[in-house]
Length: 445
Image (tube, rainbow, N blue to C red; front, top):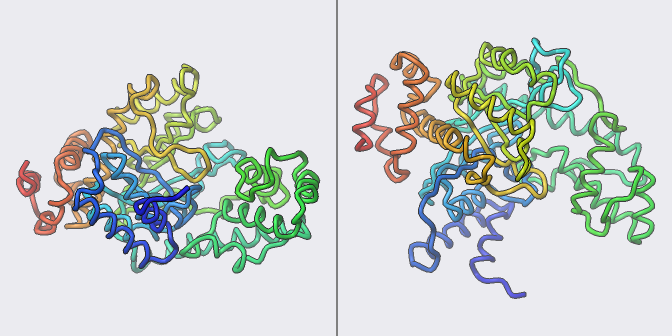
């Protein structure tokens, strides 16, 4: 089937060559300006948690590709989040400005929560370990202690991957990987993840066993059961089985983390604040022992500096079913609203089959869609105000200019909702002692 020029350009947005991506985006924008491509009005749905190929995106999306598709889908706000790096930030924010898309960027990692050292939180089978985020970073190039902290996150993650690969290599012989030649080539910025390693093993096995029968027998022997498909190295079932059997708890390459394996949550939050972001706790589905202690968990996170909370909606409900996970979602969303914790939501897209955007109009999500949209506007407003003048949500200026969290949230939501992307530049004219009213007047509000 012959592809169109637009489809060809969209494909080039995922090139590992930054120049080719930029040229493709420029060509697409030219077609929009010429009236050859019609982009929709902005809607009321958001995705602030999409991984890019700077960590792992199951569809191979670059920062520019996600920005382009986000604009095509009419997202009100879009945000990228990658594991342990801010590599996507500059490209994504620049693409957002060119596309008139409200954009922000963040980072995800795992942290140790001392108060929950004996309880599983949201990292399955790993007591005391929690996925954790920073959102709304104003820039990627950090200096001083913050810069070193960010560098250490990347370095530690890659060392962990190399050690994991070494153990798995022993088990999967004759299918063995070379980290540089087989794994790092799958990512443009040298930030490989476990999912890259799984893909590399699937492809290497295909090279070693050219015969389908031999390949199938190999995987049955090593994984304990037959995958639905081994013909394609990228088969979802096969990749998930490789990861579960060799890398997760109980797997041959798995080593249980301890309190020294990941940064302490409070230390990570201090890094996020120093870098100008918003420290953000994450919620899975409320079924673990740690998440069942909701108030205690949120209190621990806030005491450690967290000021927002992340949700992955599709993990919290089954369409057409009203179950415990959905009730948990409503409970924690309501609790977060009471405490003034902005909600950060998205679909991740780092596992095959995940949606581009959640169905905010569904019966299950519609009761909390307003909370999700409000949180997105707050994070976007923080992002642009912090970039422009250092007056973001977690800044000293914000601490001195609002009498309550509710008042601060109302202002940042109003700013994020009202500010037009093409007018973001006016905020750079603000002084560090600007008043709330002066900011609103700057944007004509």
